[in-house]
Image (cartoon, rainbow, N blue to C red):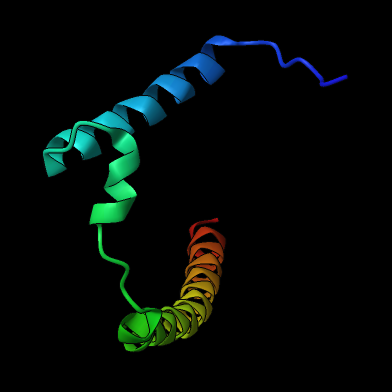
Length: 93
């Protein structure tokens, strides 16, 4: 016997959102039936986007490296500030 899933407001909202998206696609393409959308929309080969994806991944890796360098610099600055603050407090006493 199949399990029954309780319909919560979140699940209902998700279902309505999906159906609304399907209807919008159908209306944008000027079709009467949502099943015809997949027939009309052309399929694009993934090879055309491989370079773009590769560039995004490389940029992401470069950003991670730069972030690590900046974190190290920030730690050095914070340590310097901490030492200077301690020195100032010591000189005031």
